[in-house]
Length: 268
Image (cartoon, rainbow, N blue to C red):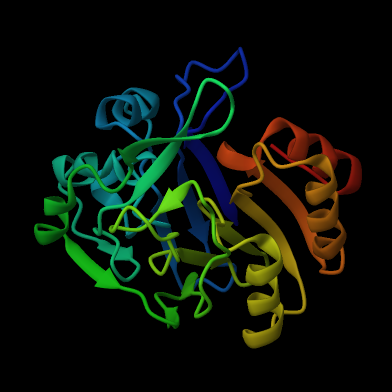
């Protein structure tokens, strides 16, 4: 059985007691059907320690985590990592190459054009990595009976708004980590922001990794603000793969959410 609990997201239902913030954190509880393992995994940590703590509200003991996965080093996915240390977790923390490297975004001007202002959007507390059991992910890594992690060898498509440490060239997102989570029957793919783009990621999973079917995808699609035509094109490519269900959130965007609900099975 696989159970996902959304701890941090850009929005929640009005009935939820959890406070929304720009960011993502998901708790996954996995019990293998063959009895070969039980996992308690934190997928990303949101933007702030305080918000993550409040949203958990004592419902989850982070000290019992078996793994933490940072999908990439942006502040809205790694800012709550201090709570893992505070909880006394002794589990591995999986990160991609260069996760602590400074990264920047270009801010939009009032007229809708790209401005000159650069905002640092990398890890707010990279020193935490020196005090935790950090495991670097490169290529395909079988982390446990329930989880396989991987990085994409090809650079992410250039994005003029997301810059590398030199504040001039586009970030290649070498630090982006994806997770395949399974109970031995179901298998879900997690992507924090999917900066590499769904077509590239799914080609890797179904091609290089040899998957024939996924039970679902959970995480961000990074399609917020994209033209509807581009979103439809991505959906057309995605439709070629057998994916049972979708739980898109965070950086997906309202337009992409609408397109996905019309074309695919969206849950949660």
